[in-house]
Image 1 (cartoon, helix red, strand yellow):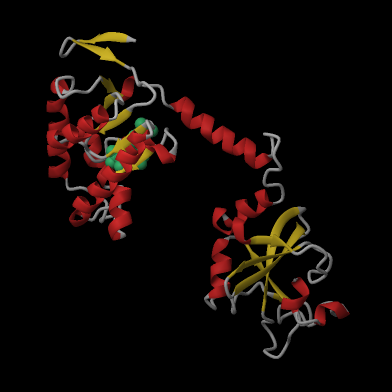
Image 2 (cartoon, rainbow, N blue to C red):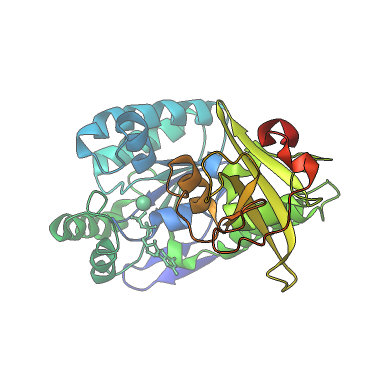
Length: 322
Ligand code: GDP
Ligand code: MG
């Protein structure tokens, strides 16, 4: 589609061929990374991410030269393979853009400049939402914005095959398509098994524990409720799935922990595990004094009439869960 951009009488282009080298151009806070996230993560080379890779700090300006070198190495490898690639950096300097255009040319891949049209005032305001190590000073943001705006009329002359405004592109669909595909796969609607009972695990504890999670089928440790383990190296957490929490019919997890009443007690005691923070607290010793731990022998310490334990619950619980 071609329309006229009245400010410059240049044709308004929205073409992004495939493959293409897509060069985002815009100040910090102009929305480059948000826009870049509409492509597959493997297609996006984000300079901040390369800074973090080489220095552990995305905002470490001292690391820029090494980060650029690493980014360019990956870019070369991708262009060699004719893979569509998005370069997510300010790209406000002409020399930087020239290097990118040359790389695209060498590999016969069209170069597309995508200009972020965000007002400079908004770019500056957005810095306040960033952590101090990521926030770019207002003066720098203004200079970047001016450089990007000034560059616009000359971008075709610099060798870009297409010059496109981000706010003329429809990128919500690919973003929602990927999110939908992921969701359908999780639910097993794509013909594969899906996450099944791990959906609840993920909702309560997040993604990080999923690969470490294993149901201990047949375990009687939790009085017939399903038992699971989270194991990694020398660490092991044991949980029970409760299907009627507080008699309300809700699903939830309890975490196996030490008896809050008697140091010598080896019977299972359970602490409600509401989130991944409960798991962390258990590992760091911050769970010990939680008020809602209930021992299967001693109750919660206030209630001495807790049910007597079943015999099999006396077995040391680490072995029993296995
Ligand atoms: P960058 O510094 O150019 O990479 O800017 P970011 O992509 O990090 O954008 C900064 C913030 O602005 C984001 O976290 C979003 O909250 C917001 N933002 C940026 N672009 C958009 C957009 O197109 N739509 C919406 N709704 N918010 C945006
Ligand atoms: Mg960014």
